Amino acid sequence: MSMKTSTRQVDGVTILDLSGRITLGEGSVQLRDATRDLLSKGSKNILLNLGDVNYIDSSGIGELVSAFTTVRNQGGELKLLNLTKKVHDLLQITKLYTVFDIKDDEASAIAAFTKA
Image (cartoon, rainbow, N blue to C red; front, side):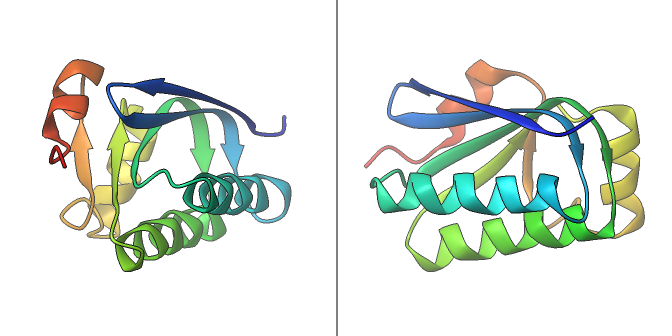
């Protein structure tokens, strides 16, 4: 199953809804392209909704870190939303849980972005 993405705007925050698998190849490329596309359109506050992501491999983890770094370097913020238990545990094991700003519900995630 490949990854699917959809984008929506809420209060100046761009929410990227992801579903499927973020893995070497198609999934990680889609994530990279979607993030760069949002940045090129001027979106600085990006929320990755991972509620429907059932699997991330090491390449996918690398792509999350890359997206986080790219957004931050362009003066933006990237947060994660709705982690599944599997993805949550993976971020705990890799010690990346402390790097990302992770929220459990959309309203508090949107409120957490610094309003410009």
